[in-house]
Amino acid sequence: MADTLDDTTVAIFIAQRGTEQVEFTEPKEAVEDAGGTVDVIGAETGEVRTVNNDLEPGDSFQVERTFSEISSDEYDALLVPGGAVGADRLRADENAVRLVREFAEAGKPMGVICHGPWTVIEAGVVDGRTLTSYPSLRTDIRNAGGKWVDEEVVVDQGLVTSRDPDDLPAFCDKIVEEFAEGRH
Image 1 (tube, rainbow, N blue to C red):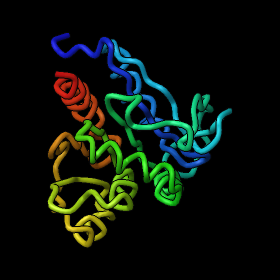
Image 2 (spheres, one colour; image 1 turned 90 degrees about the vertical axis):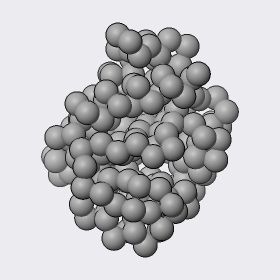
Image 3 (tube, rainbow, N blue to C red; image 1 turned 180 degrees about the vertical axis):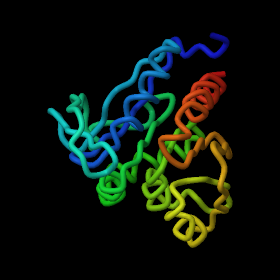
């Protein structure tokens, strides 16, 4: 693979009973398959259950570190999966929001999909950027000063966004590419 993520460490957010499983697992696997290391970050350590289609219980995953105990300085990139409930919980967590702001201010690449941009909006780092998301977030993005477009994958200043699980192949390819470029 042309884009290698050897020596790249990525934080991926997960929310209790609300993160969309496929939007968590596929980007995580794409980064790991490219040689990167991914740490699962949540509000509390321990087992966290994901969801499928926002309502059906998904698999459980182990949270390795908490939002409050990490800094963006420890990571090269950030992944924020969607799921309406999970994204709503993430944007309400002041430490998750702080981390998104830190990553953005440091110019580090971020991959954010579906409802995940809610956390980016809450962090106040959307103004002047072009994003895509789940269509219901378009007004939120515009109200935060961003430009919303209906495209499979969008990259603006290292921020990679996609609309929903159907976009995962393009999203995963693009995050690997952007995360590799962010290391140089």
